[in-house]
Image (cartoon, rainbow, N blue to C red; front, side, top):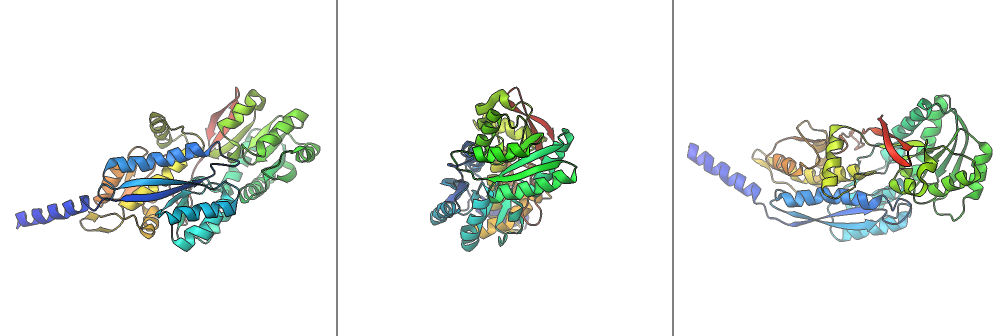
Length: 401
């Protein structure tokens, strides 16, 4: 009887391990052109690192491999982003990493992901409006909402002794949402807001906006915008006219291209962005650099988005003998929360092969990854924030919030 049991167990295990291998298609949609184009190549590389890790493991769905298709969200053109996402779906992608900016993310969710039943995990869309978007359980984000991000930035502003600010914000879902939260939080902390002025992201000249901000005055200028378009030009105009010399930067303004352009002119400026100094974050930074990936803004969140998709695949179709896994879109969406929140064996960056094998054997896993992933029931990341300061012409981590 024991020999018969052993034979049956071996047969079942062999069957799970040798499920028919296939080529699984996934999509990445980010703004490879537009106001954050300097950030997105690294973000895409972070996601592709996780997908390659899963393919190379030989353990995903019987040795299946993952093929990645990229699409350009433009960050700001919802129609173009929708068309690009439709192209991914027509290619047969089973899940999407993206989009990036909040407005285009909402458009892709409403017009493509929900109608087609394709799960999407954004690494960087932070608008509070996305919290209540109709998503049919298909939308998740590894970056925390600006509902908390604005509060954190106001805390940092108060802690640094700033008593009055002018605010300029890009006129998008991201800019409006974050500026509103920041304004209310700043005033609640006794900080005077002298003006809150919108700007468009694609103008050739911002002298009128700089003039309004200069007339209002303040100890510092809060720039809620994008570092490659609009926000950087307002900073340039403010410095050249002497309107402001200290800038408080939203996450969309933080990146090497800003300090490459301005250097020590921005010394003393500061801001905040999602991130942490946890062991998981440090482990990811080492792992990314060892594989030629720059662990910069939203790269960890991009890696985590891809890793969650992979581990959700491995954790599907389970019975007493283990998990056969599935690349079905609905199965992926159904398993993301359990993979992210556990309880189970903690999985970090560079450990996806381990996570896939554990999940395939029917063991519970708890993906921590680069950003200590943990979701609300609605797929919102709790997340942590880094206070960033510009010293010696470069961004440095000042503290974790």
